[in-house]
Length: 324
Image (cartoon, rainbow, N blue to C red; front, side):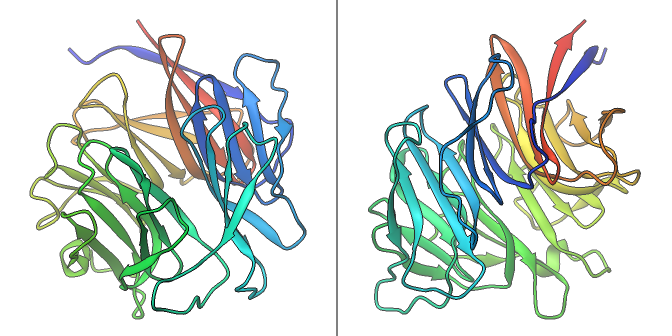
């Protein structure tokens, strides 16, 4: 019998900022927005604290909490300013930040942004990012090397369970889906664009890999979720009509996976699968604002209960699952 559960939604925002990125560690939730970085101590009256990186010409594109005090953040400028700092680190929970410009080995910095920052969980000094190409750093972002240039990326994914698996994708210059992967930690890359193509102009926005089987992959592409059981060689559509922006594995159940993005009705939703994508249930927040879109999602264990935090274009929401 399928597991019975109910979801409890909560609006965690005291503002309606456009949230680009979320991260969670040790009871603290961090959001990167168009107005800087904020943090919230969960179960503390929704009192968000502003902790910096806010200017009139920047927005925070990624926040990574490796602990409640150890933070990494990236920003994007709205003008081309190559010499400015775009990667920041805090070791005191955001009270102070140290920043670096984007320094490329044997290459010039073309842009004034860094997106989709990720790290190898076995080696936190090994970072990956995107500045129009996929970049790799072995020294916490002081010096970067360009390792792959494909299409225009909408995401960068480093599997926490299979850290040699790195995926990226988006769209190419013909406005068709673009997808590529590395299975050796970013040294070599394979294009999967022809494999994922579904006969329509669309982008790939997210990928997630099964914790137990590195060949089992889900991808959010246009208004679909597609599943591969052979590492991206062949694909099957498993959910339609929902524009999926983010896919995340459950922390508590190896076959459970979550998806969110933009629903046909413009309401906040989470799609839940307990068989790693073969079938889905939709949990909708009836009280959500119209036209809401999930940009990032965090899966956390909060006092023993699996909780999702969703960063949207209209603030932050949570969904806690209660089993019956």
